[in-house]
Length: 417
Image 1 (cartoon, rainbow, N blue to C red):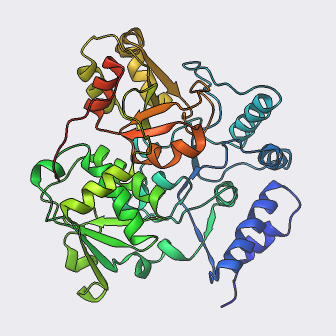
Image 2 (cartoon, helix red, strand yellow; image 1 turned 90 degrees about the horizontal axis):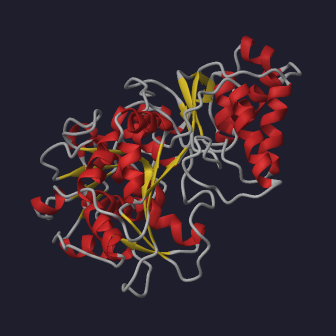
């Protein structure tokens, strides 16, 4: 099937400016993917503004020099610097300067200075059925699954090209037929107390991602809506351990009022019945530390912490002084609230290090420490931290993370699956 561009799209692509460059990138990507056409998008979320090398900065600056501007609302994922000055990033020159230039280039392209991996909790919530072009794995899976908007996993630098052109390839999860569930992930065999706990959702997300890969499935056996932060944690872990772009939860997510509705033909290709033993193994697999006698730091907020999660953190600390720091990653939309109500001052006095605009897994903020041990309640952090930070990981609930930070050593409360 060959790609057909409209007369307007052809005219833009034939130019010599930044908009033409973006349109050609989108069109050539669509042709490679076998898409028959381009479709208009309502918004974009840009992951390509995180510095990984000088080429990314130079690419963005080339677009700016060509006069390009985003054609649709475009929020930005985390960058490499904490521009709010909450935490110290250990990037040195010339890397630091190139990272700053990259962030500035995306501002000049007209992107919103959101700098968060959770734009959906910062007011960017496209309507169900809307076509968008989002980057960053957790944002993509939340957008598709919880909001019911339609996007593929747009990587660097196709995301900004889609935002400038206002177009995306018509393929994959933009098409209704590809959003049907092919398998069932049944959690009815797990206890209600486990499913009602915060720790369950990153664990189940990690297991889900490993079991399904990039397939679309429906989770059954969930008796009530677990809350948006739980769905955020599930999707982030699933997109990290697998290549999940869309999941459904029967009776919870918008496209799955029940399992039968979302299953293609009403009958799944596979049924995965999750046992307590499978959940326990998945939980254990999120920890990589050999010794569990001490910790050097706690890191939370991948995806970025919401205001409700900061409320829970403050309650659990209860005014106590931490023996080891808790690095709490969030977006500036939440930071504004923390500053307005005095929570930032209180939390920092307790020993919390607030990280804004970025994340401890993607840029060097944690101290360099051979043999360091990091505790986290994030399934996504647990996946990426060992390779990106050099710290071994212990996975635990937020409550156990806080108690461990107060005590300076691991503390675990078991919740049976």
